[in-house]
Amino acid sequence: MSALRILHLTDTHLFGDDTLHYGVVDTAERLRLTLTYMADRSFDLVVCSGDVSEDGSEGSYRRARDLIGGWARDHGARAVFAMGNHDRRDPFRAVLGGGQPDADEQALDGAEAPIASVTAHDGWRVIVLDSSVPGRGYGAIDQAQKQFFEQAFQSPAEHGTVVVVHHPPIDAQTDLLQALCLDEQDAEWLLSTIQGTDVRVILSGHYHLPVVETVGGVPIVVAPGVANIARAFDRRTEESAIDAYGGATVDISADRVRVVPFQERMTQDAEVFRFEEDAVVRIIAAAGRA
Image (cartoon, rainbow, N blue to C red; front, side, top):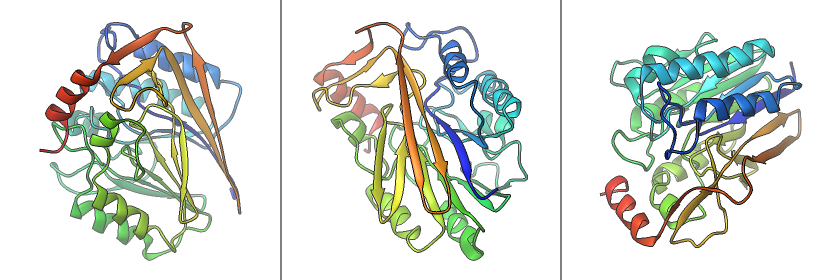
């Protein structure tokens, strides 16, 4: 298999029960709609790049495993999951292992370790990193993961490597998400480390809107959220999201990476939430860097 086709999903924000996200969105049903929207297409990987869960319950991860993993198997693919800032490591690990439960994954050792793993299949390598910081909204990558990541490149993959990490190593569109972005030094480490390697793409989430930025020849793909889609060009000091779902297809061949995002509105002009500037300041104080 010299080409790789990926369905890139992110920010599903699943609950273990029937709770509605922001009191509005049935995230399990929204995920079903997203998967149904892509039902007539085939993929090699179905990637959920973090914030798999909203409540951090084992039940929410079982839902993710059953819905995303089941759909992937039905479509000849395998599922890949990454930790986001809303996820919790122990329940995630109990259900989804190192993030690649349908493959022979090599995961970072230790019960308290971040959720990081690497697999190799049909000449492709997939690396999952854990950028979550327990109890906070911003992202970081610890030294153990950095060593794990660097060791993965001791031998090249025949066709290349896909990296999955929730917090993108690129800037956000709004003040809130910029305050909750990946640590600047860790972003620089990631982008410098992949230079000269066989990394073909980095798949991320967190921003809830479609962004593709190429750094050093490697595209960083942020997929729109499944639970909602953030407004890209609202006021930077505010944060809002529309009632919609989305994702992206990513096709990788010998010399090309093709990204096609999709977005579907549920209700015209309806907002899932809006945070005014004072609310944004409070969230940054609670979840941002101390």
